[in-house]
Image 1: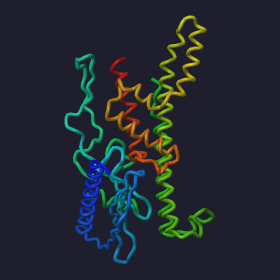
Image 2: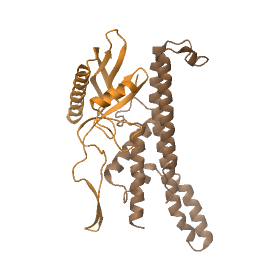
Image 3: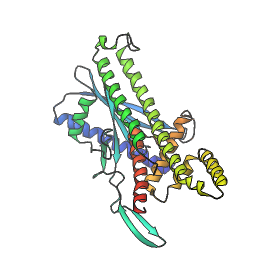
Image 4: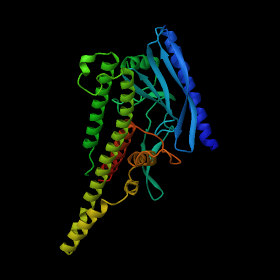
Length: 157
Length: 181
């Protein structure tokens, strides 16, 4: 596998790990008791790309499933990786995004002369990190905060 | 301009309705409320297996929505080009103009969508254009049976990103038209 691809996979897994730590931290803060099981999974994209990642399943002390976090892929359009947050009645997508490059703009030219510059935002996010792909909120992807996570838990269960 | 977002937005809105309907169904099944799913495919099935099947169906459904959104977008672009090409009707003599226009309408339907997207490079700038090309690659992979043994499966996508990219694409054309009216 090319180094560039391997680096992307390593970075994705590192970010997934950070996400898992964050979620566990939020559960602790909220004093939600849980058990978790970590499972190795293999993700493939064609015959050239195959890589290992980790899925986390969370249960109540009574062994009822709370939710799971499953890596979907490091290679997705418009983001640097995607993870699925799933419950018993649905799932939501989380994607890793970075803010648009500062000063990014569309430049209209005639010959060598600039006639217009239009500020342009593609991702429209303010900070780097995991964001929720809220399908009903067009044009925005809210940052995956503790508040968003707790709201999503109700949504997917 | 012939381009409009209504048909594309309608597909996306219908997707949201079905997606929430799936969520409600999953809730009914996971909470084991049997009378609510009598006389249908889920009756007498193991709820956990049903939930797994629904999740798989939802993924398939999501890919079909990407196809539908892209197909509707493609129709819009072709109609826009046909609309712009109607100037051919003004060729003199009239009969020749009419015939060229008729032939152009047929030929435009055969143009490759990747090349049609490139026709709008003057108005749609690289980040959007590049993302649209990636979505086209994904659409092609889905439309040709999701061959798992190809060397490189394109980056994956889903309806929201597809919808947003299409809207950005159309908005940039509209902005250009407005600025150069």
